[in-house]
Length: 266
Image 1: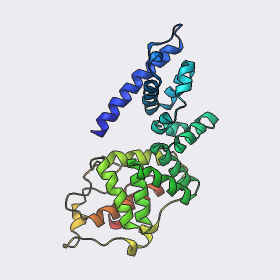
Image 2: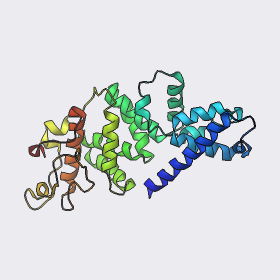
Image 3: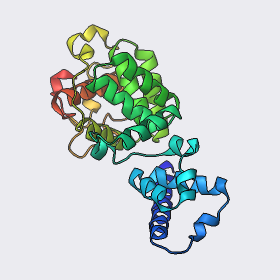
Image 4: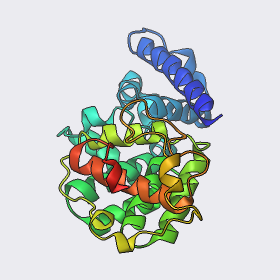
């Protein structure tokens, strides 16, 4: 359901973007400019949710678009799915846009800022603060990463709470979330890593299965990178083994760029 609504929003945003681009080369005011200001802001928010670049084009189209595009609502809903292409952009306009989005509580930009702060700039407290703000707003990728970090640093109950929020938001389909996070991390210079669970098994929750090694037998594959599946763990894997495995693989991805780990590490 959420994915379908997002795709419809993206299609609408693309259609609006094309209309705005045409307006830049038209001698007469475009029909869209006759909209009431609140509706125009809503339209531009759809554009911003589709593409940062298209929002820039909209601002250049007409004076009215430029004025409307500075509304806080637009910064709150803007999307940066192509953020990795702009990550090392030195443009003051881009980073000013990012800051305005963060100041207006945009969950996606808060998440990306948190990832940069925590993993690249090694400002872990600041990174966690940004990730927490995004996770509290229900942004799935932030819920996942924030939950993983909490779990890895011996705050298992709080970590599981956010990991379960992520599951519910995505209707228990985590494969796409993992893929997005890995793709984003590939564009970061990862300086800060998580090692806790790999070095000290006493920090892990104990297997809840009454049958020894039952959970390991229910794991369908080793690793996520090849044909990642949403039901990787199998329906009979206990929650403790599931989240331990999830954290181990995330830590391995930070270290090696791959979610695959050796079976003995489980």
